[in-house]
Image 1 (cartoon, rainbow, N blue to C red):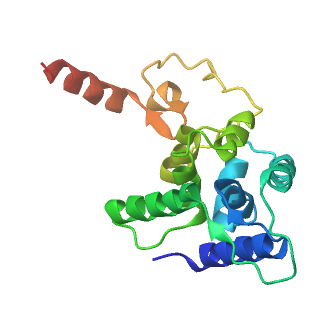
Image 2 (cartoon, one colour; image 1 turned 135 degrees about the vertical axis):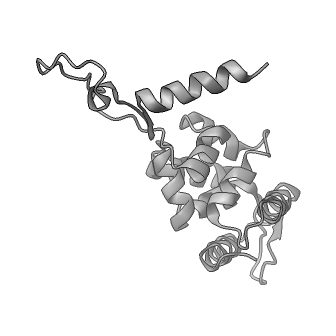
Length: 192
């Protein structure tokens, strides 16, 4: 049910919180763990995140705001309700979509459900929205813009303007040709 890489990330987050004697493990701990999770880090990079800056912001926030347990006895770090809701939300989403494993990318989507958390605040500061994450996971659409402007079709002196090669326009992954354009117009006219 939970991908092995996510299981490792969650285990490391708990171990780190326990080592620092944190009383609770929060959504912010979870997002910090996702910065080291391969599938979540790939999504964050594709959405334009500065992962090093995000790690620093989260680490500073956690160190400053998470209560610690004094003493020498072993600490049993407890997940916050928000942490538990994120995990549950990710599992339910994966089950409803018919997939078999929850990955770090699914956790990122689920984190956005905790609107009042600092984790979501830091993601928004990086310019990342839930839609950006879902677009990358579902369609491979990155937020990074290409540095090269789209090229216009060149007029090579050939007067055959109906040439499919000249009329092809690339828009993202879609190829619009005279043939597909005509089909689209015919379909659009038939819709009441």
